[in-house]
Length: 79
Image 1 (cartoon, helix red, strand yellow):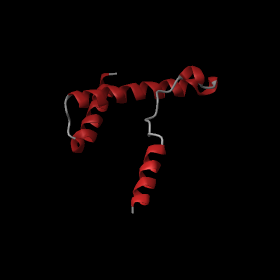
Image 2 (spheres, one colour):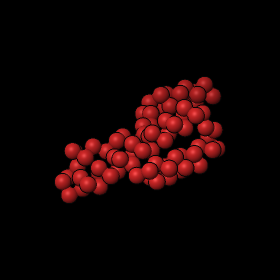
Image 3 (cartoon, helix red, strand yellow):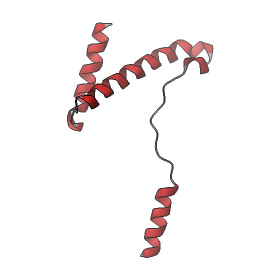
């Protein structure tokens, strides 16, 4: 049993942590896809701003999706 626990602990320590998707860099994209990359970057920035607002407002996890959708809709309406 000890061997199993040791092997499991080593396996957990050896795995790389999962990272979230980074911001798209339009300058590193082929010219024909640059416009789409710029739109994607703007959307990612809006999503991060709303996520930060949710964190600051201490929104519960069960209410977070509704909060983020409302925030994104509000930002889209302002533009």
